[in-house]
Length: 78
Image 1 (tube, rainbow, N blue to C red):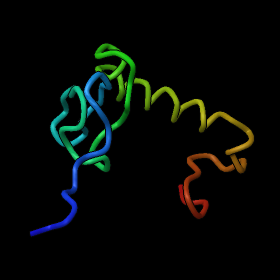
Image 2: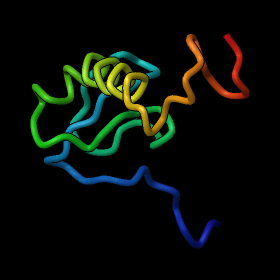
Image 3: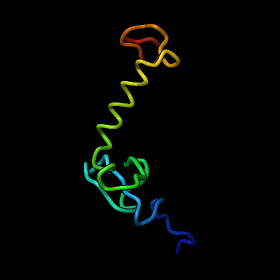
Image 4: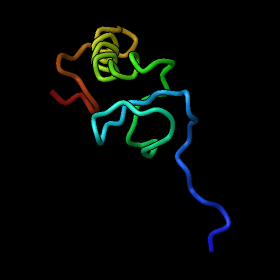
C-alpha cells in the first residue's frame, strides 16, 4: 500500500486546457505535463492555444530573445 497517492496538482474552480485531449477541464483531471493553466475562467482556458501562439509570436519578435537570425531556434537552426 502506498503511503502517498499521486494526485494532479490544482483544485476545483481552476480551469485548464488539456493538450492530450484538446478539452477544457475544471480542476485537476489530467497530469500537469499535459495541460496549460490554471486559468481564472473556462473562456480563458478555451483560448489557451490561441494565447500560446500569440505569446510565441511576441517572443519571436522580442529583441531580448532574438539573436538576429531568421527562422532561429535552438542552436541557430533555420
